[in-house]
Length: 93
Image (cartoon, rainbow, N blue to C red):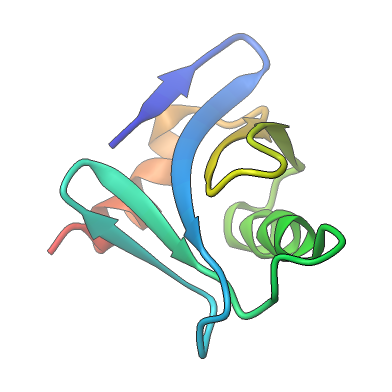
């Protein structure tokens, strides 16, 4: 999984698949795949990602790259690896 710890928080690299039935996270190989309900129109997918990841990790989340791409980098402010490990461990199948 592509997780980078910085002084500001944790950076997650994700692959987004829009127009799914439900929002969910899945580990496929070394990637975190995020299935979103929204259509990729007018930033709806980005808003859904920020909202859902904020709820999941109870932290402020920001997209730092990939605004119009399926490959995105998220910054989870103030998070450490130990904070997100339980969620990411649950993804591994």
